[in-house]
Length: 212
Image 1 (cartoon, rainbow, N blue to C red):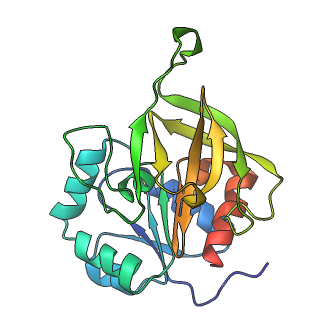
Image 2 (cartoon, rainbow, N blue to C red):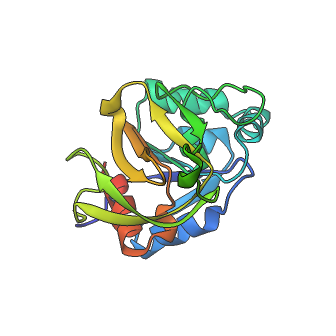
């Protein structure tokens, strides 16, 4: 599969997450990208990646403090370019999280992030969920196309995605309970896992995103 030559991939820098690992994975695919927190650069993007590691409220505040909320909303909802949220970035695309003080998210997905809870006690597992987990593609148009029916991605998270409409759940995994590992609606995509740390599975996933 030849990579799109006209793609202008912008990785949004709001001060949270290892952005270099995403950029390096894209380079391995032959795709150039730019890490930026400049609204003017984000405005020229054909593809946006919203990464992140850390706390939900802190992430949304950092985006607001950098004046990025408006341009991201325009790109996602008005220009409707492909946007991929990774880990915390995936959670920020929902309307909110059980974590923190109730800071609202972008609300691009009708969904929320909930903390893992295990009942009965015998089902308790360590939190966060860390490691490689089998992940299933629930829809043929998911970014996991071209992978096996059950692929494996690397996870590090204490909160998981819950969509109001089950049809938005494009990928599922399990950690004590089944959960949405990725949401998809129109031009919007999210991954609770880290494709940049998921070797050949992650490479295929990101390659598919570049070709959206």
